[in-house]
Structures are given as structure tokens and as C-alpha cells.
Image: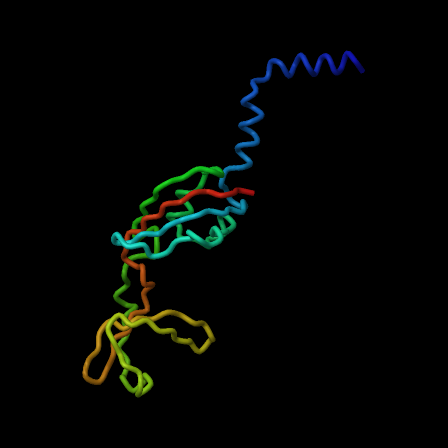
Length: 167
């Protein structure tokens, strides 16, 4: 038994210490299936759109498609404690503005007492019960053009992130 322990001790002296750290580090990097918590500030056109400052960190499981593709791609391989500034193109964010997502509807489809304004957001419910955000793009005499694009479609997204934990 002593010989076995001595042999293992001698063998371990020849294994570089960073091999152990590397294996552990690989398990703690952001990769598919890992639960990630991160703090962030999202800036668009120089304006802060959203931040986790003063709130709980954002939490998601990497690889499940719950965050925009460009952010997911840029977070891949990061570790707890790391910080990064990330610029994401519209194609890797909420997509480009889709001209087919604009629809003209009669003004009578809106409540009579509702004061309509360009850029005004509101929710609509589809026949299947799905709720989505719509914005007023244009107001005409008898109709309103509504925009079904995501409010950040066509925009560059600038994230400042700090990885809180990877499990």
C-alpha cells in the first residue's frame, strides 16, 4: 500500500499543476448547458436601454436560445469574474427591420377615447392568445400603420457585461 501511494505521489510530481486548473476551468467556462448569471448594461444609440444595476443579475442556461444570438456567441468561453464590452449587429441581435411587419388597420380598430401618437407602444393579442408589443408607425386620416418589428430591430446593441457565476 505504501509503495502504491509513493508511486502515485511520484507520478503526480510530473503532472503540471496547471493541468488540474485547466480541467476545472473548462468546466467553469460558459458553454452549452451551463447556468450563467451576469450583470449587464445595454446601450443603444448612446442611450441606456436596460441594466441589471441595482437588480438581480440576468440568469439563463447557455445554448437554449433565451438571449440574442450575438450575445450568446460573445459570452461563450467566458468565466466568472470576467468583463467584456460587446457590440452586436442587428443581424445577430433582434434582426433588421422587416418591411412586411408593417400593417395598415382602420382607426376604428382602436378605442375611440385612445389618443394615438406615433411611436406609441401597445400590446395586442392574437387569436391564439399570444401577446406581442406593437408600435404606431404612422397615422393617416382613416387608418393607422402599426409596426410589429421588435423595438430594437435594426439597431446595434452595445452590452457591457460582467459574469457573476457559471454553474
